[in-house]
Length: 474
Image (cartoon, rainbow, N blue to C red; front, side, top):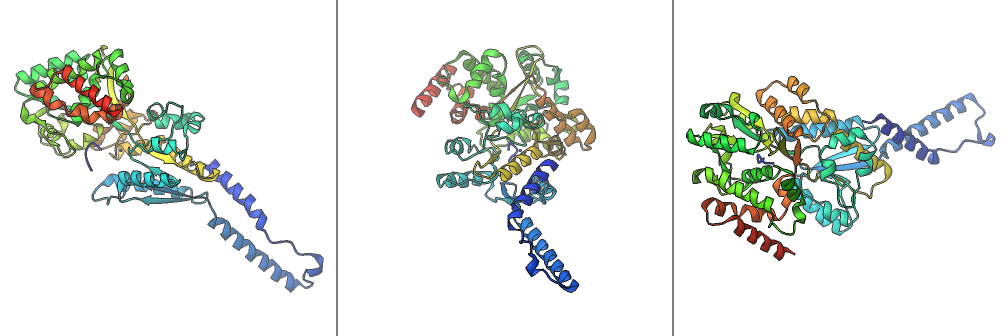
């Protein structure tokens, strides 16, 4: 697994009542006076037969409970990925708790989220869709919504405050232009960064928890460099994108352009140019070539350098709390942080929900309610706390008490994860990640980082190339 990459008694009663009503139509007819038995023995036999008929009817009713099939990508063996086993347990507990109300069939797809997505694309062309599936970030929504084949969850969210709190940032982030919400998730990509307190102390630099603005970042980097400490490692991809996205939250103007994201008509914007200038002069040119990799999912050297104690900061998500376990840098030196802004004391984090649970709109009422109940369960405070404390990742729920949760976990890495999640959730500004914001342009921007570092490209030249990409894509 890549490090980048994650109840209701009333419902049961309603469904049970519906089943009783539908069962009445097949109840055996009452006998008439002409064919009633005249002896006590015959009466006993009739009573036994009636009881047998009743038992058959109950068996039939149990067999006709509403059935919902849930497809997910957590197929991995627990020895390969413990989180997968824990997620399957969470799913099964829901199924067991509701076995008298509906049949909740759980299917682990060994092709993973990408395979689930590709299958959906094929099925949609045939007018079919999963009952409910977890797409794990693969955005099936545009195609499925255009085919009018998936359920709008917004009405259910709007009528239930606890449900809305449980989905957190997913509510606003997944709200479409026509006012619908087709997907929410039980996990989100929470990104701040990590730092080594000992290296900051050695350099006499203020640690990130003391920073007020991005000027404090600049000052700390200068002091680290002067002390012979590499401030961070990067590559032409993920970690550099994190810094670019974080710096884009510095003020109202930069946030406004950033939010335009996939709809941007031109990158010739002063705030975007300032972001690129920051990346070139304050970031890329502060590290040597050995600390700048090519990018890609397999380029993890920037992580290795940090956890080996060779760099002072790591730009990666909350899940990297696990990287601190038995690391050479010393787990006791690793701290989580969120980003400064240019508004003194105000902080920013990157929280990306994306596509998760998606439900077919072709189900009957009982099946639909069961699917909604499942999503409520998965985004509940109880499951949110379990996902975080088990080290699976960050939950979107705004109802989690992070202080209480920190007191309830025992291991150092679990405490770090809880702290990191709390910082991200409580940041003053929360934005989508770079890729979620700029879509297909993400790869084009990443391709410019190497040129910005070695000086073969200028900010104006990059902007011109990006606008040419936009024109060609129209």
